[in-house]
Length: 355
Image (cartoon, rainbow, N blue to C red):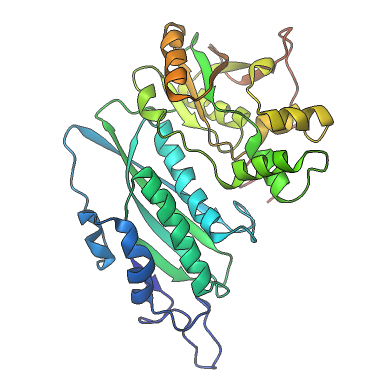
């Protein structure tokens, strides 16, 4: 893991004109001291990390297993609010990546961090960020084994690479859904999108408790790390829901070469989301198409329904059948009478026509 600012020795170095270069504002922070103080303890003694004194990690091969790798980036103002506490930003960074591993049926092994810090970042902010990072790495039993830190004149940008493992040939993919399969989701849907609005102070009719619950769902998603590995042998295809249920189901359906039907009445909603829907604070389309839920969407044969119900009870995690896989293409959302519901939006996209 290394820190780069254009200077080989110090973050926050001054340029030839006497002005601070873009980077960490506190000039007392040396990059090697930064790594040693804040990030080296997060290796938890993993030999792969080499104490973060090298510029690469050495991860031994694991015979009989496939390695699963995923990477997600979070950008200030896009994936979290500028004013969000650094501890929660760090924990969300961990969780969105572990969510990807869970949806592949993988057990997390290690992570690598790349961080581009703007000049406004202080030593106190960094310590709080590292504390949040360490809290979740310890909770999920995952070491930090390397990465990079750089300075940027742009917004705070964080990227985490997560490594996991599955027994060879058993990992879950987006391909593998078959006509006749049931469609399932974990947890509840729509809380992430509502949570962003809650964090922005845009929900006027809900109680303080509901707003706090939803904001927490946005800032601290719950990666289903206990569920993913136990779906191996039951689910034919799976992915996590980050860009909205309808859009992500469309991705899974397209890769599998199938269509899908979702029964709107079966969509599991949290009590705060139900109250927001009843009060007119949100719409069904917002809940089905909003992002940041980080629940697991999966397809499984009808014959697996009893095993999945038992799995839900064992984990204490709701698993809800929301529809089925069809021959053909496309995703339909239907009302209790089987009539298609028109949705005005499809889901979150980073790049749109005309952008």
